[in-house]
Image 1 (cartoon, rainbow, N blue to C red):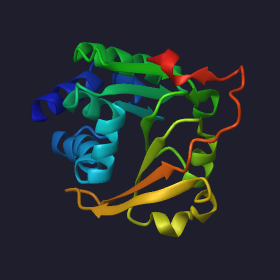
Image 2 (image 1 turned 45 degrees about the horizontal axis):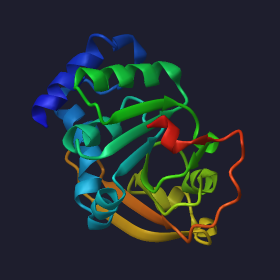
Image 3 (image 1 turned 180 degrees about the horizontal axis):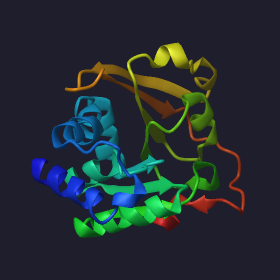
Length: 210
């Protein structure tokens, strides 16, 4: 992953320097806070890894500069990966970066979570994109889904998610150490049952984005 990290940072600092895809430019700090922080939560959780292997589809919501989307896609080429972001310039940039790394299993879409219907089982990831109580209710699906949130160590002081546990089950709460950071908490949820309102015509099926 070191070679991937070096090339990724070089791309961000040259071709896409004006887009502010990352504010971290020190190589060691970039590796720890962007690449390692994207992979360690997945690789430290059997539940996360097993779910990803079983579903075969990762959907990263609000990927920004490509995290955790691109590090995961690079390391696991056998997993279909889809990134969703509402910022067109970042979508175009991450699509181009994926092409530069020859990631044929990676797709990105200019869209919003609330506009998508998950007609396929998948594992969703959220890193620094909002509150659990706001995001989980936006997910529309009749399939079995997992949702994993990358949170800071003090997340419990900022938000509570008891209100969403009617429809989602908390399956993972794991604290981990990441060099050069205050640490990371991974919170994983599994959708209860497969009951969902009928799909609205205005929604986009996730399968059409792949």
